[in-house]
Image (cartoon, rainbow, N blue to C red):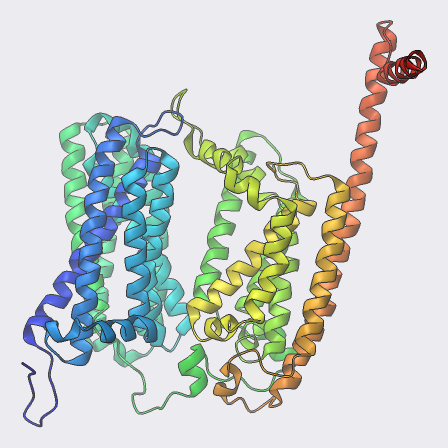
Length: 629
């Protein structure tokens, strides 16, 4: 029966109101436990040649149980959330049409759908997994399901949209690693725990740093005015800060235990149990905060269409100073760049401590890639890319062509292979071995095939811009982020095959690389011409909904974007073509020197060189032909 208030407005059932936070928290704890258990299988427990050990199989069963609980609570939360929104009893909310509309037409429903698909995928993967690689894949899907709801949380409507979402994303990700890691370490046998603690300690240190920084940034993005700090929301934030400080003290205790070799089973377990209890309280507070609306500075202000759709206020008409000096951080992409930079610098310092040298040019190339990517996403160009197709296309070209070339020439895979930790025994591959296994996997062999790399690089242009997909992705922060990551990843793969200096599972002949470049140039030109000659708008009404006061001719702006894409797309391909010719000539020179050295060695030992042997072989074939005739 439908409940109603005194004025006749339907009210939410008290049962639904009471059950919703409980079921949500249960699902949150189950998902964190799932990630932690999979993390334990993948990185903490000792494995033999990539096969799950008996202890890993035991932990896998616990992970399967966690996945089932997570899936069950997700489905329950979906129906409870729908009943809460519709202010109807739970049974009425289970109507198929209502559920279909909820998951297809609302951001909240879509996030539930993504999480449910992720939970089902994890459950199916774990039911068949016998290798560490499968557990790692399941962990990736679990993380997708955990992070998906962030894009429709209160952070998505905050004033500092990009910073709020990005900081919350990293906060949740690394607190999941931290809390889940403690759960996983607590679940394994004490004998395995002693071996796993040093690795967990390293992860906990990185997680503590990132959780503290991201939490501070996120708190500031929501409480960036004085009155906000007197709110109940701020009091919960302060309590979370205190609990996080306590957790960092626990982390220091762990490192002290490891450093002093005090591996007492009872003492270690007590420390882990106490740490886990504080963590669960902290996570519960975080879940509670997600249900509370943060304080708003000016509640009477009516947000513009631009702010509601993009999360950014409409900028003034573009000028050189605004494009080159403007900066609004895209928290998620900026966080990825900072994390990548931290890992790269750590790798270089690790080599330096060993006494090994890393070419300065590669480090400079990496810095250039980071600067270009940041300018294209958080700089003035990244800001205007949200509001005009021409700027979007310029940012696309920089992200998909200029930045990837710089990253490829910085050799990040080679640096990782030289610095990542190896296995803890003769049969364990370690993190370095896991990367090597991926580089030599069937998947890597397929995607680094020249045809595959070219199809992903240029074929995705037509899929994105010649279908309604572009308009749909531009409507959300997650869609925009997906496009940016795809541009860079597709460009990195293509130029890795063409001019890469990192290990490649297949050696691509230089003539094939040149054919690929000419093919990419032709396809790119064809795409640009098709875009420029398109009489309609490809954005599905996105740019018109922003009501921008400058560049009001949308079709001319689209035409300009196609022209800029054509012009900017040809230049880096020409650079790659020149680099390929240089690499070809250098390889030929090295091969000539190798043949000369072999000939010198053969002459010194009184043997025939390779050329003499080849000439004798040709002469023998000629004599054979004469004998047959």
